[in-house]
Amino acid sequence: MTITDVRVIVTCPGRNFVLLKIVTDSGLYGVGDGTLNGRELAVAECLREHIAPLLIGRDADCIEDIWQYLFRGAYWRGGPVLNSALAAVDLALWDIKGKRAGLPVYSLLGGKTRQGALAYTHATGETFGEVADNARRFIEQGFKVVRCQCAIPGTVGTYGSGRGNAPTGEALPVEETWEPRPYLQTVPRLFAHLRETLGDEVELFHDVHERLTPIQAARLGKELEPFHLFFLEDPIRPEHKESFRVIRQHTTTPLAMGELFTSKWECLPLITEQLIDFIRCDLAHVGGITEARKIAAIAECYHVQTAWHGPPDISPITHAANVHLDLATPNFGVQEWVVHPPETADVIHGGPTFADGYLHVSDAPGLGCDIDEQAAAKYPYRRAYLPVSRRADGSVQDW
Ligand code: EZ4
Ligand code: CO
Image 1 (spheres, rainbow, N blue to C red):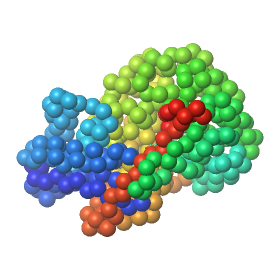
Image 2: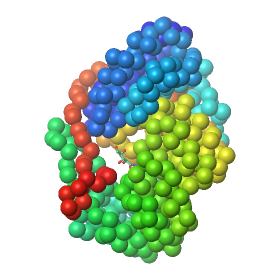
Image 3: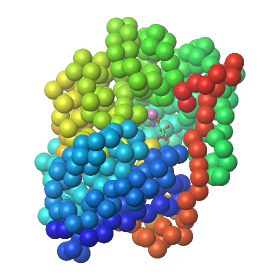
Image 4: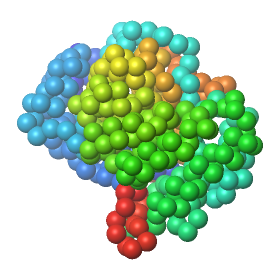
């Protein structure tokens, strides 16, 4: 089955997405997603100018070979831009393989190991009361795991407090402020409040969003121990993996890391030294299902579970890929899940569905998603940036 056409679709149905259609001579095509929030056109141009010409004429069946050819064959390799482009290709090829076999992708990956993927979503708020109310709303909808984020007194636009993570149109990035001292004081109090009001049944956790130093993260993990978090997400910057040893020495709060990683090699020391409990790479940024399933297999040997990144800034196609892999992975842990803006469904059909705490995908062949290219054209790309964060003295802080 030969690849005859590769179409890059950049569209903004509620937010920007970089989508891919790979068409074969048999008429079968596959859909993929390489959306990289805030750097979308870098991926789109990489796909159009550098990758599409390399795909024409290749056998769509050879996913692993095409992956190796694009990753190692290009000499310059890795990083979020190139590996998001690679992910778009990878997802589309798995979609084609599934359609050709008449099987859903989870079946190609070994079949279901569970009936649904345990899901979590984000409760946010300016006050503890608001976070608790929002969490309660999700629990009533069936969520058994809820991520909780809260505004931090004396700072502006704290990550996850309800503002700041939306596309900002043509404007330059919003600048926010953040300080570790009030943050470290507030988060344990938030979880004390949440346990008091929501009880002990529901699983709760928190995303630090890579903002702390190792010793600060160690303190936070320790102080959160009485509230039995499901995990503490992305406590420190992604660059120096060995820093996790410091956190691990001090706390039994489970640790999760990985949405900024772009390859299996970056995951290695964290997994093989058992410095984390959950690996949470983004399929759209590590090179797709092909790379993520290897990460899952490495993690399985070390008691590490998967918690693939599932934010609104990757399309329902990647969310579908997440759940196909979740269903087939014995060491699956939990799946992040959000509802996209309503316009997204005009362009991208399919994607996971949520019921009673779990995510499901259809049994349709492939990923079970489709792209309406005419609808996509009605939603032109709009430049958008993530916010930038600064300390009180004006210096740059990880957002
Ligand atoms: O801020 O994907 O766990 N989820 C997250 C995300 C990230 C966005 C950045 O583009 O941390 O919401
Ligand atoms: Co996160």
